Amino acid sequence: MKKLIFLIFLLPAILFNQKCEAQVSNSQQETARKDSVKAQLQNAQLLTTQGKFEEALKIYTGIIEKEPDNRDAVQGWFIAKMRQTSTGGEGALKLIEDLGKSYPDNTAIVFWKAFIEAESGQFDAALRDIEKLTGILQDDPLIFILKGQVLYELKRYDEAHQAFDRATLLDSKRWDVWGMKALSLAKTGRFDEAIISINKGMELAPDQPANIYNRACIYCLKGDKVNALVDLQKAISMNPSFKGNARKDEDFKSLYDDEDFKKLTL
Image (cartoon, rainbow, N blue to C red; front, side, top):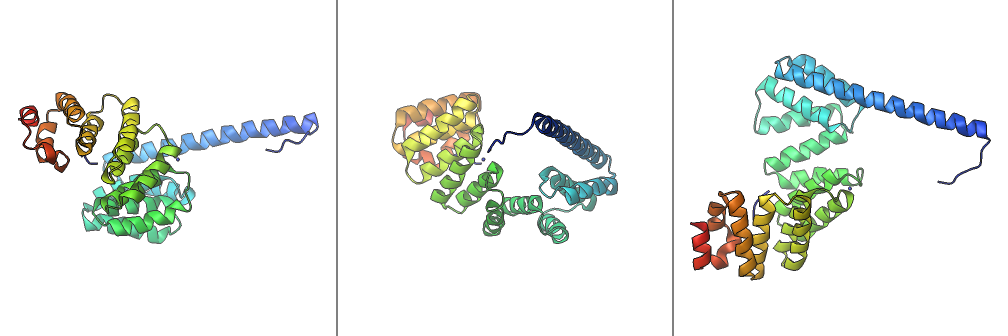
């Protein structure tokens, strides 16, 4: 397979009108605040591309101090710092860890730290950080998507499916997450459920060859050669590189000696 959430009191009319005006005012203030932060982020990004790292970092830090959940600010800070210091590999993780020491309760920093740990293959450490977030951000689909990906890499497929399932409940429009959920189901032999899940992803994004290829894998694991080859042919027609993938993919092992499979993947 291809890799990779009132009780209404009757008040005098004048009080109700005042409350409505306050809500409108608060809404306008919130919109203005968001626009201001967006403008600051865009300015910091521009400064980063110009090599003015100190100025960019100052803006990002200011946002981080005021908005502990702003992942864009933490990501921007991290990119600017990486470019400033020409850091990579383990040094990248140290940068985000050092930032976390200055802002220990910042959930956005914990999120990106977990992401960097996962990217570097430190899945157990990533999962520990993710668990810190799931109790705080219970309605954030990105937390559960990352959790599912890490659990999948740890081969804890049942738990990965539960995380992806939670993510699709929180955000049902992510075609890629329906595909991830399907892969975790297939790993536990729940092929019919996996096909239902990946079909949902294909409804949302019918032109994504990765989902078509992965459904071919699931059909093959299920023992349905006909549908497996139909999907594989369609995926290859959209992305010829899938020929080479299929020849090496363990999911197609049962078809390695099949003449129809050979013709399709040559």
